[in-house]
Amino acid sequence: MSESEPILSFEHVSRQYDAQSVPAVKDVSLEVMKGEVIALIGESGSGKTTLLRLAAGLEFPDSGKVFIGGETVADASDARSEVPPERRRLGLVFQDGALFPHLNASRNVAYGLRKQSRSEKASRVAECLELVDLKGKENRFPHELSGGERQRLALARALAPQPRLILLDEPFSHLDPTLRRKLREEIRSILSDLGQTALMVTHDPEDALAISTRVAILNEGQILQTGTPSQVYREPVDQYCAERFGPANGVRESETGELCWKRPEDARWISCEIADEGCMVTVESVRSMGHIWEVRVAPDGYENESWLCFLKEGSQIRAGERGRVAWRGNPDRVAWRS
Image 1: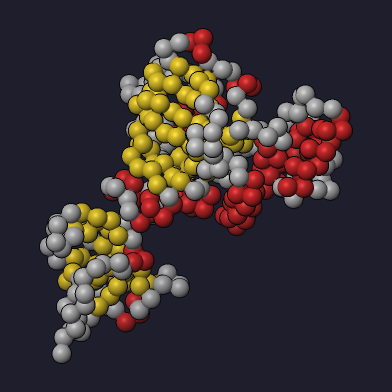
Image 2 (image 1 turned 30 degrees about the vertical axis):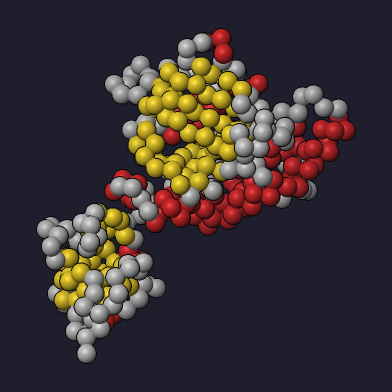
């Protein structure tokens, strides 16, 4: 396989369960290139977990093909093409770790090392445990480890056989916010240092943006947008994609009339006496959020709509006040009044 070929490919893949009236995945095509970490994000039922299961070999497509490392591992037109999960050279990390409770850390990691000598296994286990900062805890059982340590152990077990692809299914969902943030940083660093290709399923926008090099947004079994974390956050293609990553305001471009989506932190408040820029608004509410002010405004010309703005100068703004809101990145020049 050449460096330019994808590690994982979905080619017009669909999958529908008997109990569902619509497909869980509908005509999805997606490539995961070597060294990429792609996050699949969407609401419950959007199809992200089904895609991961199709990659893992836990589901078979109703139509389309799945390739791993250039090899056909599933072809809906030929059931004999199916390659079972254990032969796909994948590493799996589930949301609960799925560790073997009766095995200590070393034996959990060694579980997938079947064709190596005893000394080779011992060396690889030690290497993987050190990689995830569990050196010295080789003899501890899963119940003797913290939640973050258990997830790091699950990652070590997945990495031990040197898989072509790591699949992560909601790996941080059971962790408290502080530990979640710390573990995200650790796993991102490990995957990056190894150049490891990975596909992660998550419903959490922070997980997707923090871990991935590329994000795919799913809804009703279809991919609506793919792009870097910055692209999907700053340039969403529609309201659904925008709202996967927090509040967004629908703003019409002054020249084209096209609706685009602006983040609350990009709002700029301008006193209407000072400048003729942005859109005239009426302040509906002002609320302190500690380090910033949450200001909701009703823009002129937008019937029954409001914008949410995060402003540092909110303490000077009052409900009912008139002013203007402009957006950072807006190419319009400020027209200062003399």
